Image 1 (cartoon, rainbow, N blue to C red):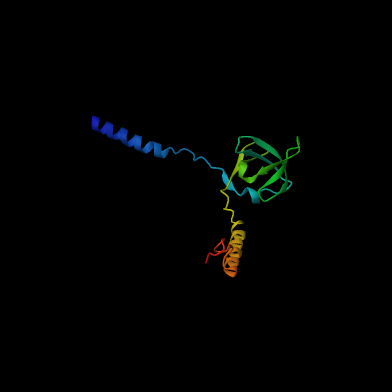
Image 2: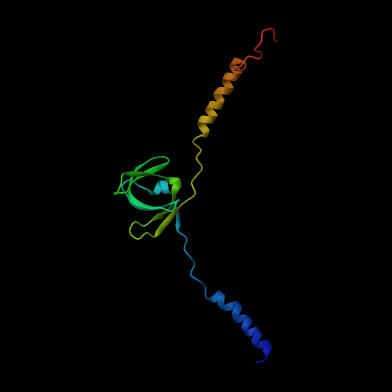
Amino acid sequence: MNANQVVATVLILVAVVPGAVQARPVEKPKRVNVEATLVSGDRIALELRDGRRISGIVGARLTAGFYLDERTASEVFVKYSMVRALLDPDTGAVIGVPARGQPDWRWVKPVLIAAGVVWTLTLLTGGFLPKCFFPGCD
C-alpha cells in the first residue's frame, strides 16, 4: 500500500467508525401536567425550583397549588409553578418534569364584562364627567 491508500483508508475509518458506534441516546424525563397528575392521598417526592427536595402525601389541591403533608411538620403549600421535577419517593430518580403550563385566560372574561359595563354606562349617560366644571362654560 502506498501512502495515499493508507491516508484514504484512515480517513474512511475516521468517518465511518464514529457513526457505527452510536452512543446510547440520553432519555429525557417525560413531561407531565403536574395539576392533572397529582391525586390527593398519593405519596410523592418533588424537587423545587429553589433546589429543595421535599416528599410527603398530597393533601388538598387548589387552583394555584396543593398542600403536602411532610409527616415531620405541618402541611406545606406548594405552588405548581415551583415544581422543577417529580421524583420517585423511594429512589429519588426523576420521573418527570412539569410541562409548560397553559396560559391562564380566566382574567379575560371579567375584564371584558367590566369594559362592556363601563362602555354602556358611558353611552347611556353621555359620559361620566360633565364637559365643563365651571359655570358659564358651554
